[in-house]
Length: 252
Image (cartoon, rainbow, N blue to C red; front, top):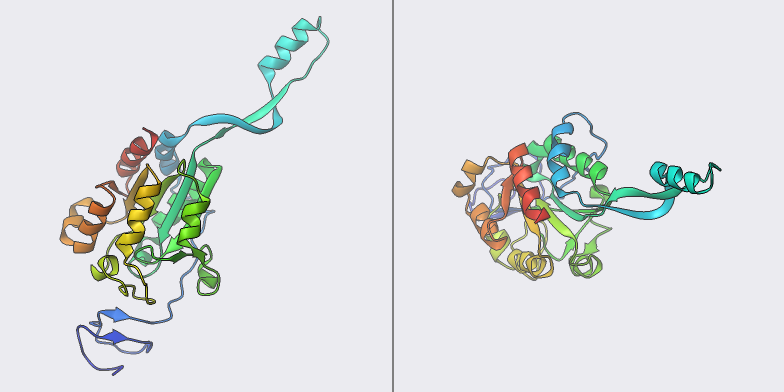
């Protein structure tokens, strides 16, 4: 029952006093969107992210080309000949997937700083949310996540293999959320989480996982070890050193 005790039980609803031991809790959870306008604390993160920049001049010619203007003016015997050029932008395409809710609530501030820094540094940025592990759908708005979802298969088809992918999450969950169909704590998933992670690995050559938990704690969590194996050990701590190491790998 709702107030009973069973370590392998499934709890549905009931926000009152609980034993805290149910293996799965099917509550209707409410998550907030990450704030991408956070500035405090983002400066050092931006420096780390800049290792992933690859500049190209794309788009409309809307920036004054000073050197070109001087050169063309000289060629025209001093008659001013203004030259414009496309703005130099970071050409890297980035797909961000944020774990939201549950144990990730403790890391909202640093995730918002990372999100805000990425929005500033990368023009070609796409982002989605998931909870614990990626399954058949993801979403962009946590307030409407039950009604407005994106098929993960559509996402894989929409964004080309030239995108670099960053998962952000603590990878802390029950192992069956990764290994078993029906393992999700929020819904029935026909295919296990590891199937979807492998699909990402097959599509994209450059994938990393950024983990807000300290690296020396990862070995104590079975699910974290499983996720590290699935992504070929490309998991990095959400520290400046970890971000720089991850960006170096993505930029190779």
